[in-house]
Length: 214
Image (cartoon, rainbow, N blue to C red; front, top):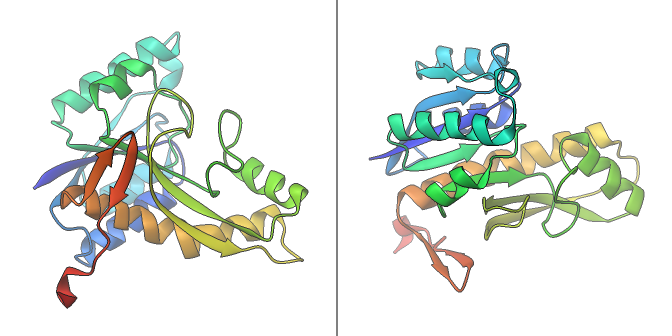
């Protein structure tokens, strides 16, 4: 059983999607064993407590720079014996000391179809504002491995979502969360824990075959 450590900063809607999926038995081969927050006031901590999941708080503001903060995160990940690290609304870019220590073991969900509307500065509503500004007809979500560059790691799963003519950044954000993020993030976590993701030439290949139908 793999130890899943979830990193959060805010409300924790993606964390809740993971908790719900775990309670439904949809995450196989792994279990959320700890939630780490960069913000002591994050509502995500209440979600973890309600689900009986231990948590730790490592406040970003107590560290002078990204490197020292990342070293503190890395020490906690090692202490928790992390097998998989999930960034679920974690608002701090981790230093390479973490990504190099956990290669292809850190995943993130991004609210767009990478390589569109991604990279530094593209987070939260800003992603959806840019998508609407550009006039795309389809957006969606991407689950990818995390490396040294923002939103540049190997793609695991993607899910498209229709963009409607009357969308606002808020309505588009909600539709993408409900129809894409909250579905493919737990799916990717389970695939990882079941050892059904392989890496070849820097690309991720997920075995999404339904084992029950074989």
